[in-house]
Image 1 (tube, rainbow over the protein chains, first blue to last red):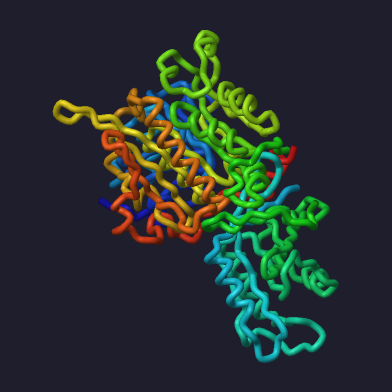
Image 2: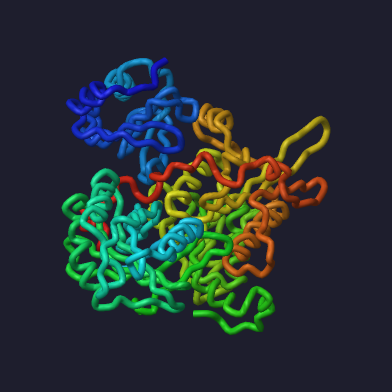
Length: 111
Length: 171
Length: 274
């Protein structure tokens, strides 16, 4: 299982999400995504995202958003990188994929 | 604007122990304090000092008229740090007395010349200066787009016990 | 700012009244533990409170929520309002700011705190709170209680942990572990309806407040242990034997960059400056 995010993966994400910045906190690596286009019908349509590619409290990967949506089960609020983030309960998105695929799988759960 | 500077007692000891070392040609030593920070919800700033950057012995130039004169290389080193790290930079030195220090004309002139350089490399953050004394401090912060500089109003040395004080100059 | 008093607590030091009056204490969680903490801080003369709790009182809280009344239950009042009322009744001059929301939604307020009391049920909340505290060099005082059944007896225990910047953290102390966070996450973050009673909460809260006072007005030479363990069955509060094997410096928060707001920029100034 690879935990290395290579530069081309970040560049690939940047094409989708605008500026991508890598952060670390509490031993975890996060990719801050400036603009995540959310699935059709979501309100708002775009939000900031924080993609955690490491195990996060029992989730193998996790996507946090700057807003809480009406879709998706069991939303919770978290404080990461000293900002407020929202996420929903969606497990099983494996880390051994490209970061863009991980992002896509999390977003697919919101359709 | 309220500005609160916090640092650990271990970092303060590190700073003081460097600044108090004698130098062959300079009357006093100086350095740079790299800080992270954030806005408070009431429109103030909290600064968290995280790293002290001393000025190397060789980067002091002889000058009888001032306490310390540092070379362009010393400034470049500090600028390089600010370029690579998103830190608010405070130029720091010490006055050897107790009680709250006050800047001299030389101090103010030095800051006016030095501090704006940091906005060339890190324009998105405030930068400033700090004077320590044996038991107190004076600090000033320039926030881009805010005309008047802000005095550092509150200081906390994080240790057992917590040491907190409010600047007299800011009252 | 301070009320005149007989100062039966003058042993705390000459300037203790002023020190406590100027202190800013954040209390996150205003249930059984947090309400006790608020009451004691108010009696001590703490001058500034930042209170966080998203909940409203229910009748099941009455057995332990200090300051709450039957009328509060009928009116379904917020725990922050109850806390504020109690503090102001004891110290009318105290500044009490209330945030009846999840603290994560108003965490910028915590940046002004001199100390944070974590009186929350969830391990995840503790972990997040401690991270914020470490970012801003804020001492974090955590209390927790547990009731469990073993064979035919109930065991009641708890801990008071003081997480000081640079010192051992809740992970160092074993209070936070990945398996606990994972288990909690598997329950969708619900800590469950933990059993609590007022007297055990009182012991934990009192000890936590004692640590806060020691932090500000060191009336005793020795600093209190970073981790105290409470055994309600034996009636003891003792320094944890984990301290003997704990490192004095923390390895979990050792990064030199995890301070402040990672997104801090003057571009945010327009939104912040009122």
